[in-house]
Image 1: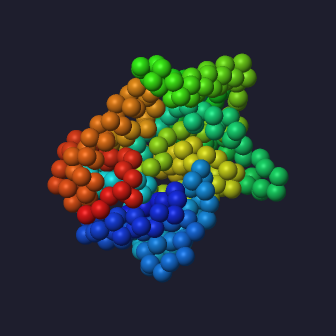
Image 2: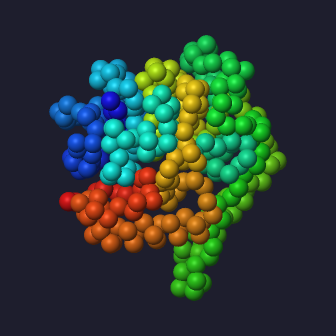
Length: 320
């Protein structure tokens, strides 16, 4: 049995019935982790933290989640929709994994500088905080390096490289003068970050990796360890797109990714790409939304067969 757990970055309670209906009959247990929830729905677990460290939601909800005795736990964000043909019976095959494997869409070596937000957050990452006693709660440095190496080869733990996300100025220039001024400021900011990383590199104190946090899965055999690491990284305020992939790499012996899955997801913002590529993908997603008239029933019928999932889809604007 595979439990589906939907994580909400924000308190969008109106999405709960829409997602219950979308996944109804596909998964025996559907859970919603909703920050500051005060309602009475039995499958909604209230959690308390912010969107930058939502790995803590999993640690807070773990005791409740484990009551179902699932064999596998599949986590999705509330603005990501899975291929409607996927269910708990065919999920491993659809993701290209074995039953005892974990899954995450992508893993990134932060030292290569390709994952801008992760690079910036990695510079701030620390496991040493006043009043925080987590010594011995994570694998040793050497053991963590060994476990991470099962899934990704790290060139270095020195954060020096940074690939800026440069936007092109919009044309005609005068008509878009306000937007272009914002774009120019953003481009300068990214170039400044690039220079700062090169002139003042940061040596990571622990083997941290980057990755995508909006879809991942954990087998029951790794769940307790994964949950514990999520809680530790949350206590240390490690950014979620570093904390979750690192916790998965530390706890799972085998991890599948989209590189080994039969289909890939359609994701506008991840993996990191040049700005023009993100704009192109955003336009394609908007065309799909217009085609199905923002109706979930139409999307199910018209789902592009090449996509494992689509993200982001803001369900506040969708109905049946």
